[in-house]
Length: 248
Length: 307
Image (tube, rainbow over all chains, first blue to last red; front, top):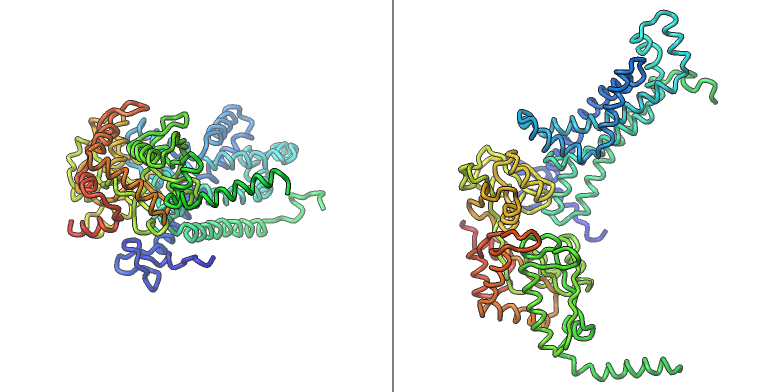
């Protein structure tokens, strides 16, 4: 620990001079400025990816539990397609292969491609959790709702989903934290996020240990913040006796 | 004392008395003579400088230079046989492996700079790398000034990025940086049209172009962004070994033999794919051969401050 040099974050990225305030002025950028901007990219990619994943994942998960065989097939095919290809490979497909097949896609910024890739990959996992949540409910609930005259959408909206989503909050919390960590693959398509910052800054400064510790701390803070937010939601929406019926 | 210990003691005593005779072969030379072997650090894929042929075999410009130098050393030490072991190294582990004695001489693509000279020693400069840009031949780009508003690719984790940033600051040319995760990826950015130029060591650019589907579609153009000496590396504070290696290299430089070896690796088709890199020796490389020296990269930068 004796030869650690935390001043590295205060260095100017152009000439390596230490700037006393640690934040660059008049166009100068320090490694700290760069790291915070990279953090912003990590958070943007993760949150937008999570929004895409929650919307599409819930939809596909619901489709897989409907009585319509066509919709079930669509949901299953979607889930298997996106969860059986490694994330890094999917990112490369979106970035290099698909634009080569459909040239107009070349104009789309790589940021949106990464959000799409990350969102679709995670949507397959969320779809699986939503399906499991719905199927864990006793079959009688669906039948009773339909028997009292609810339409199928009403059955989902007022009977099945309120319980299913409460059941799957813990795995959804893990998935939301995973998307923060998975966003690190965005470095492969030139998104200036934390991992790209770490790879580049440690080469420029030869201070890999300090840089990686800084970056790890920011990943931890981000993922843990997501964890706390979802924990808060879990507490707020809890209905005593609803899920653990007959439990402790 | 058991008989076996007696023998051991005798051997130790003998070697202690024999020591003065070997005194001139301190350090690495002594290690080579005593073990009958030497371990050469090599790279898996460093263009024409040092690369693998598969099957544990290595070749390239620096590998051949090292083989020639070691043959000279073998003769000087009067050894009937010298066993050369090859140890692949990476940018991350080459200096620690040199310091801990795993490798004795590194024949790859290590930039000789002042920071590294604190940890290791470098032989006289055998290759000078120039950082330049590769573009599509039909793009009409011939200088860095034309890159204003364009997309420029480079590889994450290389010093070219910083170089580009400095240059951008100094000239006011404003371009968008794209980072490939490795050299092949960066070249793909250029090939697919996402980037208009790729900034990297010209040796690497030439190699990537040679291996591409249509080498004629690309060319290396523009100002030289940076010049870096790439040297054979040795352990620090071992002047006798450094002198032996330097002498061997200087002999090749004086006789002009080094130009022939260069030609073999950079101008002729090379295995395993039998492609030709096609990178003639730069003026800076020729200057290094004409007046052998081990000046670090910083000295080159100073000389080039006005350019």
